[in-house]
Image (cartoon, one colour):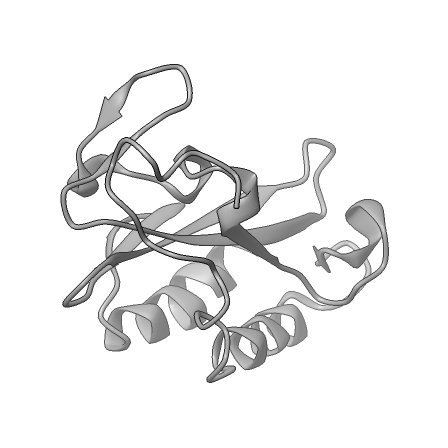
Length: 137
């Protein structure tokens, strides 16, 4: 699956303006930075993608750590302000993109379809000042 991600998904994300090192990617916008992280199943065979946004000047975690925008990851943003992209809405890891059940090429194609959704980034919540971003809505 790594090969499919690196030959199909990552190049497409680069055409969409994302930079960074797999599994954490960033896209700088005019008012915020889009954050995208691949999270793999601890037991193997699947992954989910977490997306979030942070202000251009970074975030402050709920424990007080300041993270500059260039180092921010989707995981650094409070869970109420990030979104999980998965294959379907099934609970647990069965709803994740499963390459232990489906061929990696089909999983990659389905991932690209999900990532291509025009409304993907529209409901992540407000992007606020760094010291407020970690707070729930």
